[in-house]
Image 1 (spheres, rainbow, N blue to C red):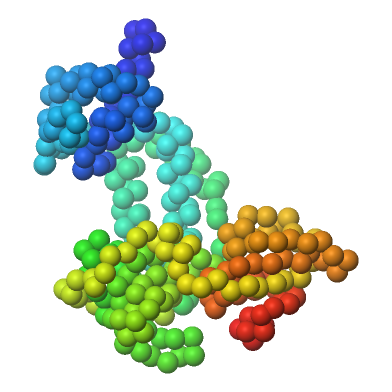
Image 2 (image 1 turned 60 degrees about the horizontal axis):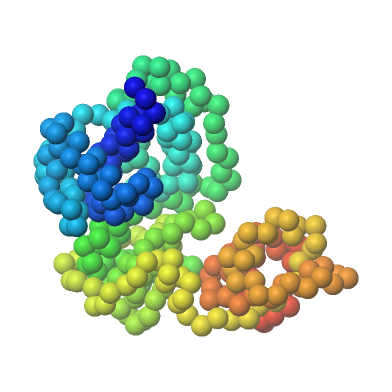
Length: 306
C-alpha cells in the first residue's frame, strides 16, 4: 500500500471518528481540518457509505450518522493511552466528587476496548504518575456529590436553579440563579450565574451549596460563553502591587491573566499596575498566593479585603 492510500485510510478513519463525536459535521470544516479539498472529503464520505456506514446528509448541509447506529469499539494509539492515564490522575485529585465517579466509569469503558499490550502499558505506567495537591478534601467531602452534573444539566436545558447557599460569614440564603458556567480556580469550583434576587451576576463556590434543585423555569435571558463573560463583565478597578523581584519569574503568565497594564522596576521591587474586574474575588485570591512577597499600594479596599 503506497503513501497516498495510507493517508486516505487515516483520513477516512478520522472522519468516522468525527461523525461519532458530533451531531453534524460539515464537509468544509473537515476539509480545513485535514488540509484537503472539499471534493476530496466528498469522495471520503462516499468511501464510508460504500463500506456500509449509514451516513445521513449531503454536500452543503453536513453529515451525521443514522440515529441508533452502533459502531464497533475504537482503537487508541499508544500516545492517546498515555494521555488518558495522565488525565485520570488529574481528575482524581482536582475533580469534584460528582465528576470523578463518572470519569472513573468512563475510563473503565475505555480500558475495556484497549488491546492487551496497551492494558499492560497502563498497568506499568499508572503508578509512576502522581499529582500532589495540598488542598484539604474534607470540605468537598461534606458537600453535595451530584451538584456539578445538576448545574451542567441546567445550563444545557436553560432552566433556573434553586440553591441554599452558605456565605463566607456562615449566613444561609436561598437563591434562584441562572448558571452561565462553572470554572475551577485556586482549588475550588465556582458557578458564574445571574442571581434573580440581586438582579446581577454573582460567583458561587460549589462547596458552599447546601441544597440544589433544578426547576422547570426557563432562563430570562441568553448568555454567552463563560470566558467571554469573565473578560467583559463588571467595571475594571485599578490596583497596584509592589512585588519582590525574586518571585517575578513565578508570575509570568498569571500577571497578564489578572490584567497587568504596567510594570516598573524600582529599588524596592517591581511595581505592578493592574486593571481588574475581579477586585473582590479572583484578584485577592490570586494575590494571597504570594502575599508574603507583595505589598498592596492601592486600593485601600483591597488591603481590607486581604
